Structure formats: structure tokens, C-alpha cells
Picture 1 (cartoon, helix red, strand yellow):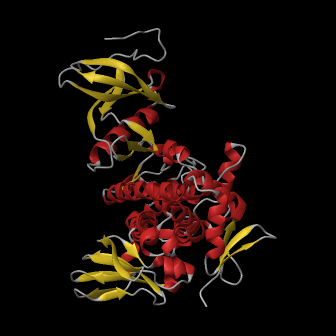
Picture 2 (cartoon, rainbow, N blue to C red):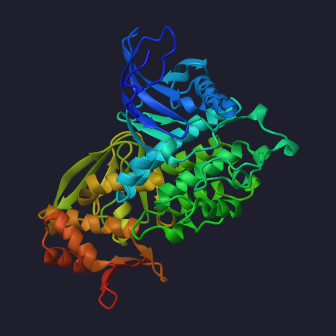
Length: 487
């Protein structure tokens, strides 16, 4: 059966006998295949039909690669690998297979759309990376190496599904060539290739080849481009052979989040020496997860009902993250104790006093047995870019900074100015640079203009708030807001 024979974008190849399908349109195509959306009339569902181009049916190696892709994908029964439903291998008619239709966008498209997204976009990308590592680790357990991991080969579904796709270049461990049998061909995507791939050393491919590729994806997340970029494919391949790429922290655009711990993870994954890389995708996944959920390494403390955890007026030398339990936040206003809010698991408090070198401006009391993670001043300053702190701190700043840590009686009456000041502090804390004396600073005029515009607060009101803040100054000569380190 044929459809629209003269239409280059239509399914114009014979369908295997017994397959009752209706073409619904072209989804995409590559060098050796095209993918169509079709309806399986027997089951009443839509599926993706991947068809080998007819002119390639007589190329034995291409045919074997295409069929092997279907079989490899079908053997990977994992939530992050799309299922294959059926395969037809008939070179006289057509070679094709059906699989799940993937709705959404590629990881590459997601990164391109969110390139100005800041901290939140970074962590959304890291969540995708963790799921990709999970799928790759599963494949490794089956003796399969993907060998072409890149953002374009990851699909991000419309409901949060993550799929690692295009297993066409995957290698089976038991079928890797011996050193003397290696054809020395460099197969993969040059912009992300591991050095053994770029040098055609296919007998050296193993789990660490994929961890290098995962490191290249993480580099793309951090920097906005792959490790190897040149004007021609051959020049790009040569960079990959030499493992020549600029450090991510050097080439990242100004203002792009660049947590040092994440940079260290990326550089380890991209080690030229296989022994220096992550030995498994599971190890890389573990480090990424610890970066995202890093409170496990913080010391913990337990408070009983009625215990005062922080007291208004005391110096602030640490912050806290509630792991279990609930707390009451109070403050003395005009001589009377005022209840401000309740805090529960996952919320941080006390960080503003640490970051701004102020005394505690609220009292936090345990309402029940409460377990907290203790974030010491030095840890907060040195590791504030860890996800465990960034994500929690951002949420805490967004919901609780005004109530808990930055208030005076005047600020309690002017919430808009307080929230604007909160935004400035957040940018200083997470996007500012560290000065020689340990202070953190950020360009002032553009920050003032942007925050004032976004918050609707008059720039003069925000400037007055800054000038009243202890430990904060504006360097007029360099036009920078400077938050002094604790003394």
C-alpha cells in the first residue's frame, strides 16, 4: 500500500503486510530515516513510524544499524527510553518500526528558550540531566553505550516526561572491536565527542565515553554552547581529538549562574583521561542529585517544643532549614509580641542576618519536635551556589524574607519596598562577584533600574532603603552596590 507517491514529505513506501495504519503527517527526518505520525487502526492509537529511506535498503551496514537501533531501544525497558512496539525488516519492501509518539520539545529547544532564565532555568535543566543519567546508567547495565548523547537527542514531554532517543549509534559492549580490528572511524557528534571517539579509537569505548558526553551536555547547560565550537566540522573534530575547550566559567555569558560545585562536576565528567572521569553514569547522577538536594551533608539539630531557635536581637551566625516539624515566627512591634507566620518542612530562616551581617529581627520557636539542617556562615558564603541552598533560599526569600529577616517598623508598613530590596539582596547573593576583601558586589545602576521597573517601586525609595542598610554601601566611582563581609 502506498500514499501520496509524489509528495516528498509523505509516506510513499509500502507498509508491511498486516499493518493497518493511516498516515497523519511527517514528524521529522534524518540522514537515513524519516519519522511519521500514524494511527494504528487495529489498536486505535497514534504511534510514531520510523522508516528507513528506500535508497538505503541495499546498504547492508546501514540496514543493520537501523534494525539494531530498534532492537536496542526495545530492550531498554525504562521510563526514560521510549518503547518500541513493532519491527519489520524486509529489504524488498520497507524496513521500519513503530514506537511511542513523543509530544513536547527537545532538551536543546528547552535550553534555547530558557537561556535567559537564570537560577530557576538552571535547576530545571539539572532535573532533566538527572533523568538522562538514570536512563544511561540503565543502558550500561544492559551492556549498551549510547555514544551520541546531546541535548538534541533528549525529548522533554509536555507533562514532564524525559526520553533519551536516537540510539542509532549505540554500541553493544560484546560487539566492540578489538584494537587490531578497529576501523578507526570517528562516529558521533563532533561538538560533544569523547576523545576516544574523535580519534577513532572505538575499541576504547565504554561507560566513561557516555559520561564524557553527559559532561558535554552539562557544559551546554552552563555555558549555552557545546564544548567544541569551530567553523567547520573537521576543525570541530580536531578540537575534540585534543580535548580543547575553554573552561565554562571563562566563556559563560555575564550574569549566567555558574555555581563552582557544578563547574567542578562538569570538568570531572569532561576529563581527557578516562580514569579521571566519572566511572559510571550513576556516579555522575549521584553528584548532580547531591547538588540539587544537598542538605544531607549539613549538620542537623533537634529542638523540643518551646525551644527558641533564633532570638530577636541576637547576632546571626547561621541559617536553618526545617527538615521535620513546625515553628512559629514572632516579633516585638510597638512593645507587643506579634505572630508573623508559621514555618514548615523545606523552609529556610535566618539567612538574611547572615548575608547582611545584621542581628536577628525575629524570634523563631519550635512548636513541636523540630529537626533542622544548620547552615553555618562560612558554609553559606562558600557554598551558597549549591542547589540545596539556592532553591531553598530563593523560595524562602520569595515567601518569607520580608516577614522574617529584613524588617524594621517602617518596612512592615511598606511591603513593596521590602520586596524590591529582597530582589536586590538575592542578586547580590547569587549573581554578584566576590571582592578582594570578601565583600560581594553587583552593578548598581542597571540593578536599581531593573528592580524598580519590575517591582513598581520608585528608584529613590529603594535607594533610601539601601543607604539605611548596615554593611551596605554604593561605590559611586565604579557604580557598584557592595555588601560588606561579616566582621
